[in-house]
Length: 399
Image (cartoon, rainbow, N blue to C red; front, top):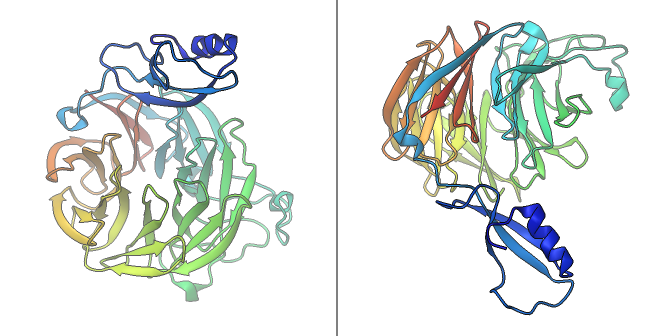
């Protein structure tokens, strides 16, 4: 079956009374993309009818290391958006969350860069089983997180406005402030329509889905908590107090531990997702804001909003092993698929820094529009999307 495309290979196997089992993918220097490069049997092997055959499909030649490439601007988009964040689905879409400035989520095609849908944040909570809020209410889309299977995007809302809401959230506050609890929306990629709402804490910011798909975690800024949501039911099952102003979340590849950046401190908090026990990782730096994890799960990278640096933390010890001077007030960041490069937006500097992860050396810094705030990396195109509060989205390609 070497060289056949998957549908043709499946047809050949079916004619012999066999089926396709697991489908793996691997880079190959010569085989065309999506063709079979290996199978789980040797030629002339006798197979029992009804057996399944595992195949591996080609991803084409291995791409160059991201750290050997440089960013080049390819697109600047403006329109009816003021994006707080951008998140790639890795399945053809990019979502931009426009908070209370536009009360929308803008959905773009990640190849053409064109806007394909604007999703309003208005819902009738009674349609989702929540009483006390007659009529239509509005949210304020902040951040988004994809489910691992690519079926759903979850969007946090800064606060809610409408009947039954009396004390909207604010960036300055605490659990004693009594801000209204807010909601997360679930949006199926197939329909791009809100199909589930999930009550969480006050002023939810960042959110992440565990790789095994079991939990959605949400950091609640003024509740000082992390909501643990059962994705099967769409209900918060735990509210874990982690400290003043929780923000970024990173989860290891095994879905065992979640790491939370506690921005009102110099610490990270680790949550054991089996027991929900907490451990504090002290002294990572001033005002840790955003987190990403290396693909292997051995390092965490932390933007330090207070010192203008990005720290590299060895997961096994919880210790900072290196750092880089990124720019003034580094906010969000993203990581290349190969894990060799970080891309960081510097809010006050108006720039994006590209950092080599091996030695935390800044290998490139490019200017963008006023107040860059969100960033995401599209694996298939090696493009970096940057959202700016001033009302633009800028796309760079690594080449």
